[in-house]
Image 1 (cartoon, rainbow, N blue to C red):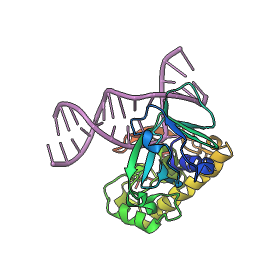
Image 2: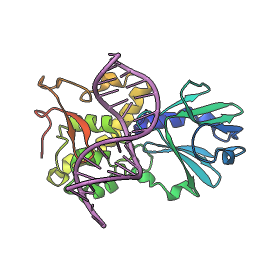
Image 3: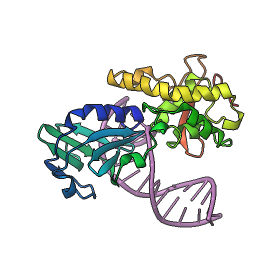
Image 4: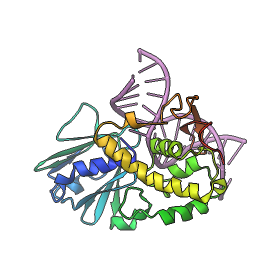
Length: 242
DNA sequence: AGTCATGTTGACGA
DNA sequence: CTCGTCAACATGAC
């Protein structure tokens, strides 16, 4: 579910509920569900891995974390976190974190930091990378303040694509290579989106979960890297450590 | 069947 | 105070 492109898909799949009024709201979420009833959805948005349901004066911020799922016009046995009923169907959210954001959502999110947003700003990302010289690139890619929407799969695939070792420190990486980190973070997110829609995402993975490097035939390394302690799949032969 | 994982936060201790 | 570490949450794919 949870990387940025999956949230973009969710947003697209619920577009027919835009301008619809909430008829009923249920589920075990601790937010005030009564407040939602009678409210009209103004827009569905996404910021990185956050799915946003915008009403007049407030929004719901939904984060699917690692195991979050949703069903449209369908239900399952699992505990319902939040279900919204509309006249033309229902949206059911499971295993997610939901908060209320008061006021204008634009005051909470910088759209230029979301790699899939129309306002994504590569120059700003470069500025942030320069401000963190001692950070490893594997951590930088997962930093939602810099690359909103990038998750562990995108991280691993981007680094493999550009022949860059996950433990390279930003200050040691040549400027041209840093530019590739930034451009591919966004480019791969859109490839991910396309492949996921076609249900062929996994077969396009070149690094993530792979045991052998398809470029040099040597074993891939699976190793927890960086301060964020996430698994990196990489080829120590092909991916340069700066 | 057991293992692992597309994520994040907060508590705790050094 | 700050840093690192770890538990916690909860589900589905292989």
